[in-house]
Length: 527
Image 1 (cartoon, rainbow, N blue to C red):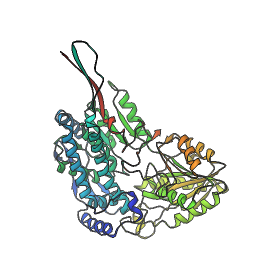
Image 2 (image 1 turned 135 degrees about the vertical axis):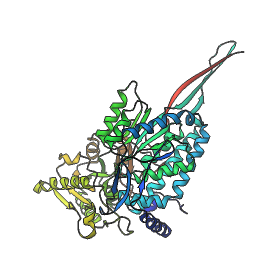
Image 3 (image 1 turned 45 degrees about the vertical axis):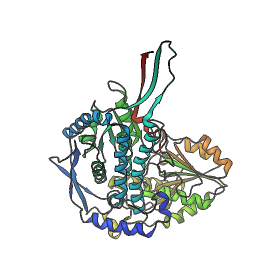
Image 4 (image 1 turned 60 degrees about the vertical axis):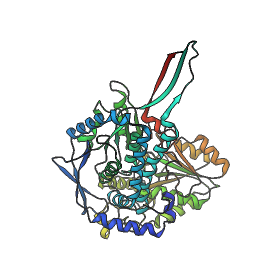
């Protein structure tokens, strides 16, 4: 457990104790590399006939662990366990559920260094990003507990019917849906599993979690924390395996009452449509990525702007759905911003992210590297019409040759080029001049996505930005991150348009009710 408050802001000035504890945890975690990890179904460890080995993105020669190659029978068993456990968990008084989930959050925080070390190896995050995600998961769960408590279990008295000779009491009671499916992505495999799982469990639903095949280890650590906190058998279940073998059978299972998904637009829309076309419509909370823009006005503080853009473009190697990938700069400041971004990119220390000095780690896999290299090739093909200002190459010297490392990239391309609309999920940011703030906002809004957006300018321009930007998360004049760095209870996180299916944000006042459905209750008695 930390002796200080750990948030993404801690990244600016981490205490020395943090590094000491992380290094000790990393050594302990490395001693267990290659171990086999079971699934968790119905309160029991479950193994499949086949396993798959996960090799981390830092060094493909290193096997992180062996995990179960689940199939449709395991998906069905997990859903059956969740359905069996649902009546008892839903009937558990909400204060008891809150107490259980707070214990889970406490355990995650107590194990934050171990979990952070696993996230660093599994995803390729630097130590601050890894520890930040582990702590954020605990805080997301606590925030759901706090909202459940603040709303007194979401039971509210309504107006009484004025019927002579009778007492007619009306109540609005929010109730859980049933077994809930959580499908988590590779880039935040703990927070985007633990956050939705915590919300679903605290509201009385049961859960089946399916993590990405590249990052199942952190999901197992979440399962252990929930087990040790006292979540009853079947209320939480973990299945591992491919999307085709496990994910699709879960999505098609009619016992699934609702789902939370984080991933690509294509898969997210498939889930939304599937859940709308069943016997009856079911809720599907889908967060589906972004092509996030930052606008820099002529009145901007360029130091803050460049710092924020670089942090959001290159943090987690650009593999955040909130990453900054488009920058529109007032033409009077364009040359200065491009020059400063070039200098910022040259200062990004890239390498094994478990090493304290390295800020940017690898991409997740070879497919991500190929996508990055294709984007660079498209810019090179433009000739004089485009330019790679910095980067655009794979880093394969020395030990980096054994991982998926690329250079942080700043590029210019015609403002109508397809790269301005494609989500690359890589450290690749495009920069273009605009004639005004209004043009920058219009170009930022000309996207199918609407997740995050950033702005740097004066107070009047800032208010115009907030009034007209089409994004679920908007930041102004923020050096900590132009488009990234939301924290539970501080910045609600969710997208508009093709970035989100509900218009509600995680870590917000309105998120928890998505895991509940309303029942109107009228109780009448004669006087």
